[in-house]
Image (cartoon, rainbow, N blue to C red; front, side, top):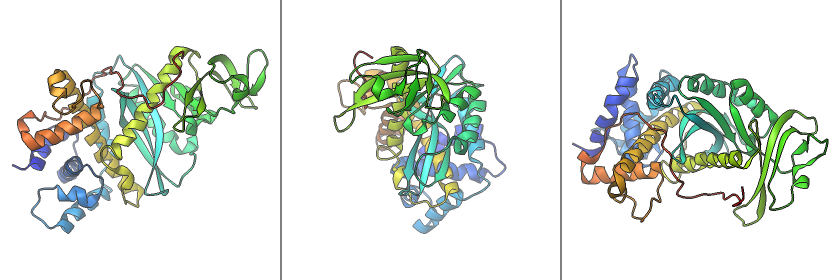
Length: 379
């Protein structure tokens, strides 16, 4: 039996149990695309097709992939929702952190905006949407996606905190979170205008000296006082080594602990890297239609869930299991990378070490293996 067929069998049993459609071939081809993506670690259609163990010519295999991507009968949320319900079935007591961020693909033609759930110092996809063009996006463009996420998550987690960077600094984002019943922590520009409770009004970068942390309660954001919020300010160094202000607005108390919580937002940036250079090379997709990218992201989402699940499996196996794929003395790989490397090794050395796909994740706590943005030690 080929390694692709073995991987297909491991995915097939659980996905068919969870996703029921009239035309079973939709699920069959979906699984084959996931298999091809995992084997090739690529989102390129020809690379995916090259890993399919079908007795057809390359052009025919690429056509199979392309037809699934453009099939209007494949309802992305319907497929994925059933899997997520199973994944989060044990999360009822969890205070969840969701992260919104965007990434450009196909040059500057498309932006993918994705809501992800923080898991083990990385993040797993919950929902996504594709917007044409570059630049900042208004809340109206993503409101329906966020409302869908709220309706889904309220059944499975205890509380939700929304995290976003300065690309979503408009007050409308915070106001929508309050309407959805979410806490929020959003980074704002250092020149944001604020009015304090004592009547002082000025820009944040004029109010907070360099290398000093400040916590303001019940401030009014913008000159027009559009939002009453709490603001935490600290400092970091950017990639060029220059000092940079980090200002976070939140409906929670402005304090050191909640400022640290904002560091969870880095999970999704690392997860986008997993999708791209670290995993499935998503940024180099040449797909030109939003619907096809949407379908591709459905396959990537299952591949990501499977990698996180295998990562948990490895950590439960102890240091002996981890050291099979991570040569360092202490863990240096994310759950995603542990799972992806375990998959490659077991397909090469022995199928019996490859766990079945169960579509189950625990809310495990992990120390990060790297901290891309380091806040001051006195935060």
